[in-house]
Length: 215
Image 1 (cartoon, rainbow, N blue to C red):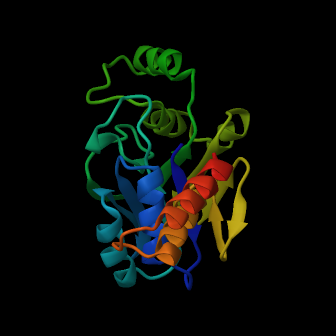
Image 2: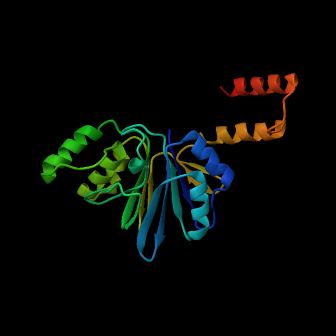
Image 3: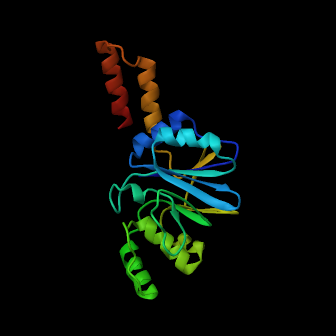
């Protein structure tokens, strides 16, 4: 499903939240932040690596955990993507604007054909629907076209942040969905029943019943 979390300058997700996001979306995380008038990113990170990075970052940040769909499991297709002519798939860098996307865009193949025809070039490197969207935003110079596309998006610029789609407020942060909370509830339940100890028959039956209610 993927998840994007937009964090205000004074709020950061803790380790439990990051680990839950990773369990629900295990194919790599990315982070975007502002520094000295530029936007920076790092991606293909683990939850632990994100946790180590966050204390070093000031101001508003965006975090995204990937569940691979279009393009398959590929570190270079983790988010974010720079919104520029190349929408490069480097694992870190700086730019003016980044795109984060939660959802699947079914029209990416026809959009890619249009871009290659208009720009008279073959776009190199691995392709995903989200990377094509970043290329399209750079080509049109109009992020508001995202209002016409199903999904949830963050356009993270060096001066402002624009969000598109339906979002949920949680713990002072904006989240593209809250599916990761299921992993948090599962972990809380395991802790309550005791991690690492041998469960009694009563414990196991109770756990099975709880997990059955969640399915």
